[in-house]
Picture: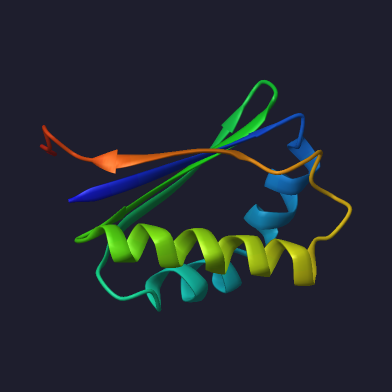
Length: 95
């Protein structure tokens, strides 16, 4: 599994907008090949998205898709580009 974390600092309004556009966000991420899981987490200073895919190609494609969506639909709302961290999951479990 491959995971990408995007941290949106100082972008509470962006997280609010993404929450209101849940259907758009879900379609965008689910359409990326190899989709496994997605979370959008509100933080004190904005938010974090966590996307899980079955290959590095999925995380790369999701980064492109997310950036394009924000630029096309929410330009000016984000405080700046997110900090992006991606890598291979080495431990994975759930309930």
